[in-house]
Image (cartoon, rainbow, N blue to C red):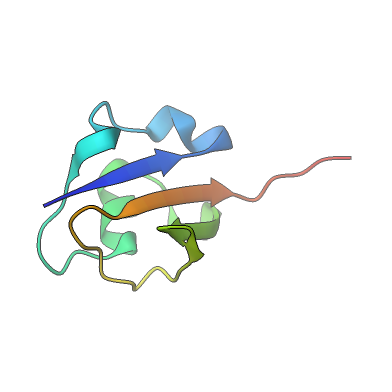
Length: 75
């Protein structure tokens, strides 16, 4: 199974080379994937799966499109 994994802003450096077809196992969650690529959960502000705001415990499925965003400051 594979997902598209998009890491935005400061997380872009953690984006895997195979982000358009990132392999996942059955039952794997958002937090499992974040751990695998080295993004601490406490640094994540928003996660979208297929355009819908989601939780870290959400189980991923083949073909999902996952977007991960840090807190972003501005002024």
